[in-house]
Length: 317
Image 1 (spheres, rainbow, N blue to C red):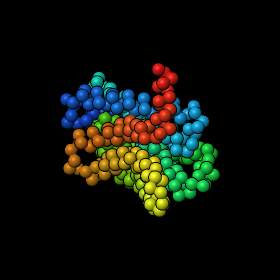
Image 2 (image 1 turned 30 degrees about the vertical axis):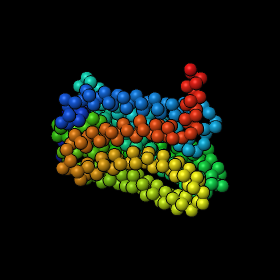
Image 3 (image 1 turned 90 degrees about the vertical axis):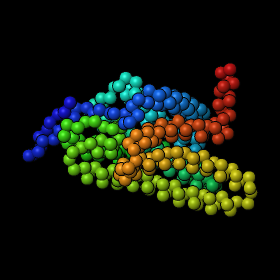
Image 4 (image 1 turned 60 degrees about the vertical axis):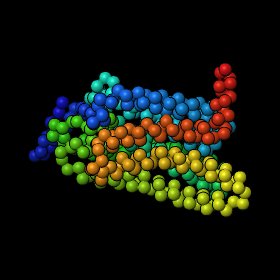
């Protein structure tokens, strides 16, 4: 189970695998929780695949808002596939072991794709800002080349900021403790079970969170302050209603994405009195609810997507 490595005068113990407990305190309910997870995962796959199937083939949908939505759909599909199948194996087959390297890879992918999604949410806020505050310059600012660069930037940003995490975790010793009280390999959950000094890991995690979540939330808030100031200057009530409606979709997605992430971040560091099963349950909802809800919110409230869905069903019928 544990491999010993000597470094200098110290012996570092690195586990060959970790044991994922699942949701501590709710083991008897794992099967029933898994049924809900399967339903959410199926909806995630169907919803996001439908978004991609509607947007990608049709050139009429190759507009900034829809291209950003397709980026988010791809991110959500990969992020869900990174965690949900392993969680179901834990709940159904009691398959709790995960290889050390596989755990680090899962950890990297979970957090990297979360950062990519945050970057896309920021880009969507910028899209709404340009559309409402500078409508005459919209097509000249948000060209296909710029959108492609934003997509590449999202990948580079997430990958670059999370790249140090696996290497920082490899330097830790675990003193023959390889039990993770979680359903997946989350950065702080892995760091917490180490028996050596984890100050560097904790500082790194806090710095990355500030560079991504804090910066993106501030930029999104600034964008929407400018948007609302412009919207309430409009003389037409119908124009105000339409502008607020399109912004409302994005705000719903932002709240669904950031509130669970912030809760998980703060409880890891300050929520010592919060029951562990509450924390782990909400951490699972964080990886399940946004990917499931994003296509529902945009699909149900975006007229063009609704029309395309109706056309597809009529053709199939």
